[in-house]
Length: 453
Image (tube, rainbow, N blue to C red):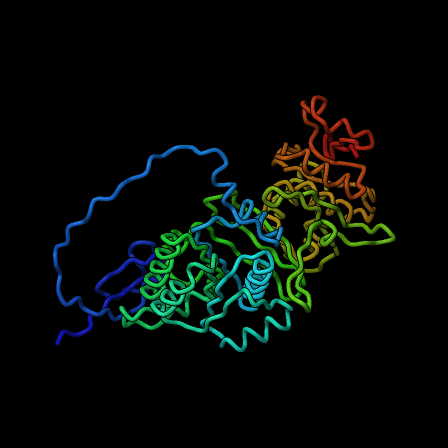
């Protein structure tokens, strides 16, 4: 009787070797090579493929847009590029307890209200537990089905039985699904890859939308082989902090829409609630103006968002004063401090500097440089910035304020919320754009010349 064979698979890239090593030779990752047992094939036979009929590639007007399913969750539609595309496979990852299952459970319930039936497959809970959670969230419906199963063949057989009724299948989570064809434990590279391939193949051939929930590692990456992200059409990350009540759904990969698009939700006692105006969520209402606080007009995907940048400067007796940053790149803070010291004479080498993006949001775009510099100048001088001012612009090493993209969108969002002073780089084409058509908006250069306002 043939014995099971041992092989070693990298959990990061999925490469297979016959010998263990501490570092993967393909992707260079350390500690990601694990042993797995594979069942030997009984016989290898040469198979002749059958001829298939290819389709003609033609551009049918608005065919893809008309076939999208517009969900009742507007923030999800924004991230997906307009709605759910039939036969698509979508992977949603996020930290434990962030709200992935809650979002999908509410989605299946709201889709059932508009006549679209779904099958919610859970491998981590029992069917009764899902029903209790749905009752708490008021997300129950007679038009939706729930199934507690982990065998991929049983799941596909159930989907095949309901294929004429359902249009959406949710798998929560893919790490719990296994196939009898492999002797490895559920959650291993070979099991995740095999189960995902079978589910996606069936869904695409039967015009069913597949939503997969994926676990993440302690580094924040999706658990399992990297090929898992290549197999699906869309990869979404559900981000958030347990200390804050908001959640951000971010698009990392999307074959049917733009990437880096975000949807904002608020976690409440009755589940997730959409936030249509995220700027109001990240701005603090204060009666008295405080020094060290500036408002940054940022862009997340295609959506402009206003956030507060808070800075605090205090004298230090240490040889190396502390630099603490929350929500921004510490390297860019060091660069801004160097530019302020060399170009504008603001030396903070004997002070501790604390910088925070209010609300727990993480900012990555360089356009936040001007808002950070403004907050630092305000905190160092203890002079509050104008109450109706908004800042955006990239600062170069020579001290100039550089142009950024989507100026009109940033200014329109600021004026909509009552801000009437825009601090940014003075563009030569501003007179020809609609920016100056807003009479109460002033385009000012924060650091146009040394010693200017």
